[in-house]
Amino acid sequence: MTTECSSPSSSSRPRRRMASRTSSTRWSGWWRTAPPSATSPGAPADLTLEIAKRMQNMVCFESMMHLICTNMPVHKIDHALTTIKSNGIQNVLALRGDPPHGQDKFVQAEGGFACALDLVKHIRANYGDYFGITVAGYPEGHPDIIEDGLAPEAAYQSDLAYLKRKVDAGADVIVTQLFYDTTSSLNL
Image 1 (cartoon, helix red, strand yellow):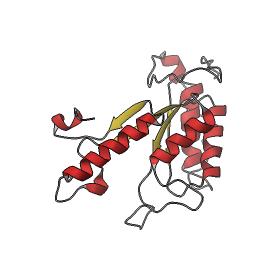
Image 2 (cartoon, rainbow, N blue to C red):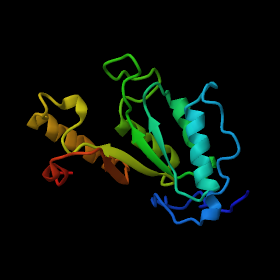
Image 3 (cartoon, rainbow, N blue to C red):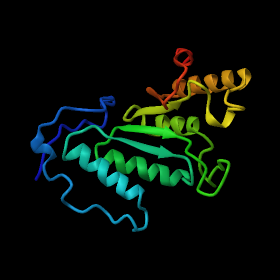
Protein backbone atom coordinates (compact mmCIF):
# COMPACT_ATOMS: atom_id res chain seq x y z
CA MET A 1 0.00 0.00 0.00
CA THR A 2 1.36 3.43 -0.89
CA THR A 3 -0.03 6.61 0.55
CA GLU A 4 1.04 10.05 -0.58
CA CYS A 5 1.40 12.47 2.30
CA SER A 6 2.14 16.10 1.73
CA SER A 7 5.86 16.61 2.11
CA PRO A 8 7.26 19.96 3.20
CA SER A 9 9.98 21.73 1.31
CA SER A 10 13.31 21.82 3.07
CA SER A 11 12.93 25.54 3.72
CA SER A 12 9.45 25.46 5.24
CA ARG A 13 8.75 26.19 8.89
CA PRO A 14 8.08 23.10 11.02
CA ARG A 15 4.51 21.95 11.12
CA ARG A 16 4.29 21.45 14.89
CA ARG A 17 0.97 19.68 14.43
CA MET A 18 1.36 16.45 16.35
CA ALA A 19 -1.74 14.65 15.15
CA SER A 20 -3.72 14.60 11.96
CA ARG A 21 -6.97 13.12 10.83
CA THR A 22 -6.49 10.15 8.59
CA SER A 23 -8.93 7.85 6.94
CA SER A 24 -9.03 4.30 8.23
CA THR A 25 -7.73 3.11 4.87
CA ARG A 26 -4.40 4.79 5.60
CA TRP A 27 -4.04 2.71 8.76
CA SER A 28 -4.66 -0.51 6.91
CA GLY A 29 -1.47 -2.48 6.46
CA TRP A 30 1.09 0.20 7.40
CA TRP A 31 2.74 -2.26 9.77
CA ARG A 32 2.86 -5.31 7.49
CA THR A 33 6.44 -4.88 6.30
CA ALA A 34 8.66 -6.13 9.11
CA PRO A 35 10.73 -3.43 10.80
CA PRO A 36 14.38 -4.05 11.71
CA SER A 37 14.87 -6.74 14.32
CA ALA A 38 14.88 -5.45 17.88
CA THR A 39 18.09 -7.44 18.41
CA SER A 40 19.97 -5.97 15.43
CA PRO A 41 22.83 -3.51 15.96
CA GLY A 42 21.45 0.00 16.30
CA ALA A 43 18.00 -1.09 17.54
CA PRO A 44 16.05 0.54 19.31
CA ALA A 45 17.13 3.68 17.43
CA ASP A 46 16.65 1.97 14.05
CA LEU A 47 13.31 0.58 15.16
CA THR A 48 12.18 3.98 16.44
CA LEU A 49 13.13 5.64 13.16
CA GLU A 50 11.35 2.97 11.14
CA ILE A 51 8.13 3.35 13.13
CA ALA A 52 8.26 7.15 12.96
CA LYS A 53 9.01 7.05 9.22
CA ARG A 54 6.05 4.78 8.57
CA MET A 55 3.71 6.84 10.71
CA GLN A 56 4.87 10.03 8.97
CA ASN A 57 4.94 8.81 5.38
CA MET A 58 2.44 5.94 5.17
CA VAL A 59 -0.19 6.86 7.74
CA CYS A 60 0.32 10.64 7.36
CA PHE A 61 0.53 11.09 11.13
CA GLU A 62 2.98 13.69 12.37
CA SER A 63 5.93 12.09 14.15
CA MET A 64 8.30 13.51 16.74
CA MET A 65 11.68 11.89 17.22
CA HIS A 66 13.25 11.86 20.67
CA LEU A 67 16.91 12.83 20.49
CA ILE A 68 19.05 12.49 23.59
CA CYS A 69 22.61 13.37 24.58
CA THR A 70 23.19 10.10 26.46
CA ASN A 71 25.97 8.12 24.76
CA MET A 72 25.61 10.26 21.61
CA PRO A 73 28.67 12.00 20.18
CA VAL A 74 27.90 14.88 17.82
CA HIS A 75 28.50 12.82 14.67
CA LYS A 76 25.78 10.36 15.75
CA ILE A 77 23.39 13.22 16.52
CA ASP A 78 24.05 14.74 13.10
CA HIS A 79 23.52 11.35 11.45
CA ALA A 80 20.17 11.01 13.26
CA LEU A 81 19.08 14.53 12.29
CA THR A 82 20.10 14.09 8.65
CA THR A 83 18.29 10.75 8.52
CA ILE A 84 15.04 12.02 10.00
CA LYS A 85 15.18 15.10 7.77
CA SER A 86 15.59 12.91 4.69
CA ASN A 87 12.48 11.01 5.81
CA GLY A 88 10.38 14.18 6.09
CA ILE A 89 10.25 14.22 9.89
CA GLN A 90 10.35 17.78 11.17
CA ASN A 91 9.66 17.47 14.89
CA VAL A 92 12.37 16.70 17.46
CA LEU A 93 12.15 16.31 21.23
CA ALA A 94 15.60 17.44 22.40
CA LEU A 95 16.50 15.93 25.77
CA ARG A 96 19.61 15.46 27.85
CA GLY A 97 18.45 11.93 28.58
CA ASP A 98 18.69 9.72 31.63
CA PRO A 99 21.98 8.32 32.89
CA PRO A 100 23.06 5.19 31.04
CA HIS A 101 21.80 1.92 32.50
CA GLY A 102 23.66 1.09 35.70
CA GLN A 103 24.82 4.67 36.37
CA ASP A 104 23.41 7.12 38.92
CA LYS A 105 24.48 10.36 37.24
CA PHE A 106 24.48 11.61 33.67
CA VAL A 107 27.96 11.65 32.15
CA GLN A 108 28.67 13.59 28.97
CA ALA A 109 29.66 11.31 26.11
CA GLU A 110 33.09 11.93 24.65
CA GLY A 111 32.53 14.30 21.74
CA GLY A 112 28.90 14.79 22.81
CA PHE A 113 26.73 17.38 24.49
CA ALA A 114 26.38 17.97 28.22
CA CYS A 115 22.76 19.09 28.17
CA ALA A 116 19.63 19.70 26.11
CA LEU A 117 20.52 23.39 25.74
CA ASP A 118 23.67 22.43 23.81
CA LEU A 119 21.58 20.10 21.64
CA VAL A 120 19.02 22.83 20.86
CA LYS A 121 21.78 25.29 19.97
CA HIS A 122 23.40 22.71 17.69
CA ILE A 123 20.15 21.91 15.89
CA ARG A 124 19.35 25.59 15.25
CA ALA A 125 22.93 26.44 14.21
CA ASN A 126 23.20 23.54 11.76
CA TYR A 127 19.64 22.94 10.53
CA GLY A 128 18.09 26.40 10.82
CA ASP A 129 14.31 26.43 11.15
CA TYR A 130 13.70 23.07 9.48
CA PHE A 131 12.96 21.29 12.77
CA GLY A 132 10.30 22.16 15.30
CA ILE A 133 12.14 21.64 18.59
CA THR A 134 10.38 20.54 21.75
CA VAL A 135 12.13 20.54 25.13
CA ALA A 136 11.28 19.30 28.61
CA GLY A 137 10.06 21.63 31.34
CA TYR A 138 9.64 20.69 34.98
CA PRO A 139 6.92 22.68 36.78
CA GLU A 140 8.05 21.28 40.13
CA GLY A 141 11.77 21.27 39.30
CA HIS A 142 14.04 18.84 37.48
CA PRO A 143 14.32 15.50 39.32
CA ASP A 144 18.06 16.12 39.81
CA ILE A 145 17.34 19.13 42.06
CA ILE A 146 14.54 17.65 44.19
CA GLU A 147 15.41 17.27 47.89
CA ASP A 148 12.97 15.71 50.35
CA GLY A 149 10.17 15.93 47.78
CA LEU A 150 10.67 19.61 46.90
CA ALA A 151 13.05 21.74 44.89
CA PRO A 152 14.93 24.33 46.96
CA GLU A 153 13.92 27.83 45.84
CA ALA A 154 17.36 28.80 44.50
CA ALA A 155 17.65 25.54 42.52
CA TYR A 156 14.10 25.95 41.23
CA GLN A 157 14.79 29.50 39.99
CA SER A 158 17.98 28.27 38.33
CA ASP A 159 15.97 25.49 36.65
CA LEU A 160 13.44 28.04 35.31
CA ALA A 161 16.27 30.24 34.01
CA TYR A 162 17.74 27.20 32.24
CA LEU A 163 14.36 26.46 30.62
CA LYS A 164 14.20 30.05 29.37
CA ARG A 165 17.70 29.65 27.87
CA LYS A 166 16.48 26.57 25.96
CA VAL A 167 13.57 28.59 24.57
CA ASP A 168 15.83 31.54 23.74
CA ALA A 169 18.19 29.14 21.92
CA GLY A 170 15.39 28.01 19.62
CA ALA A 171 12.98 25.63 21.34
CA ASP A 172 9.44 26.02 20.02
CA VAL A 173 7.44 23.90 22.47
CA ILE A 174 7.79 22.87 26.12
CA VAL A 175 6.35 19.56 27.36
CA THR A 176 6.03 18.49 30.97
CA GLN A 177 5.57 15.29 32.88
CA LEU A 178 2.59 14.76 35.13
CA PHE A 179 2.51 17.16 38.08
CA TYR A 180 0.09 17.73 40.92
CA ASP A 181 0.60 21.36 41.94
CA THR A 182 -1.09 23.22 39.09
CA THR A 183 0.07 26.60 40.35
CA SER A 184 3.67 25.53 39.67
CA SER A 185 2.89 25.16 35.96
CA LEU A 186 1.98 28.83 35.80
CA ASN A 187 5.60 29.67 36.59
CA LEU A 188 6.73 28.18 33.30
